[in-house]
Image (cartoon, rainbow, N blue to C red):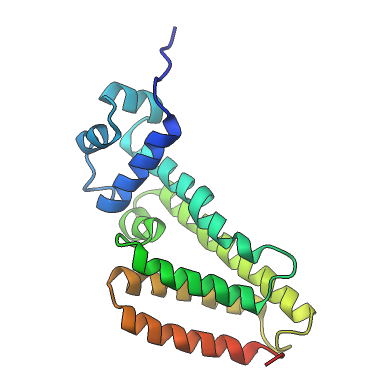
Length: 196
């Protein structure tokens, strides 16, 4: 009969996510994980498989519980340019709080070239963000709030690109540069609004 684990699996998953986020995949050893999670090697392997599987599970958990939750404000049917701007304002402010950068962006840079599972999780995030922005922009256009010649799909891709730049500047601590660039982005979004 298999032994059941005597710990909260999700709690340990969150701890592993924090450690990978702080140190990255390569610099996090199994010994680090065992110490930080407070479980033995057998329990670690029995519950999560190897380090690679644990890392992938952490990324998936991060996406589903952090990244996607933050974009939910864009999903209600009356969302418009004001909600996109509010999302971006919160996103910029968050960069000052996350001293380790974005867990997903760190994963893109460290592991996406040699791990198909990590690449797929990163693509899932980018696709979801672009789809959310596109949905809002199309609804704005249908309500007459967005200029007719604007292509919502292209603007959505542009916004996803801007999010990545914002993350990089935030991780580098370049807050003045970030604020100046964000002011330009806000100005650009204002030019798309027919109600201004």
